Length: 201
Image (cartoon, rainbow, N blue to C red):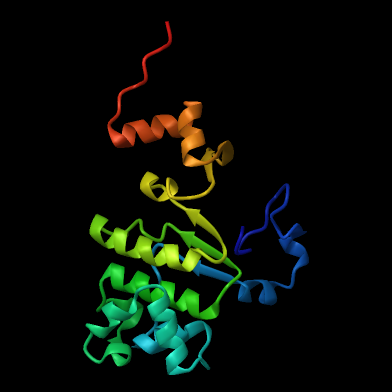
C-alpha cells in the first residue's frame, strides 16, 4: 500500500498528511525507493544496474552512490568493477552483492521515502550485517519503512509496529515493547532464548 500497488479498502495511507490516492502516482513513485527481498537486476553491467532509476547519471554519481552505501569495495573485487557483466536477475552475483547493488540504486535516486521489504531475509548472518550497515547509511537521512520478520532487524528501528492477522497489536520502541511484556516481548524472549520473567508475588 505504501508503494500504491494496492489501495486500502478502508482507512487511508498518508504521506506528509496527504492521502496517497490524492498524489500523482508517477511523481510519488519518483520520491519512493523500494528494496525488496529479492532485488531484480536486468542483464547489463553493474553500472547499468545501479543507474536503472537514473540512466542519465554520470559515472561519478554512480560510484558516489555505491560508496555511500558501502558497496564500492565489493564492486571493486568484481572482474571489470562497475563494468562487470550482470546476467539475468543477477544470478552470477551472490544474494548479498545483489542487495548492495540494489541499495546503491536506491541511493542514486535519492528518495524521500525508503521502503525496505524484507531486504535482509534471504541473507546469511555475516552478509546481513554488511547489508545492515549499508541500510543504516541509506536510511539515515530519510523516512524509512522496514518490513521485517527478523527481530534483529526490527529491534534496530526507532519505532516498531507489530502486526498480527493484518492488524496493529503493538506500537513503540524496542525497549518500550519489551517493557510492556506483550506480543513483541514474547517473540523477543523466544528468539533470544530467555525465560519468562517471574510473576510478582
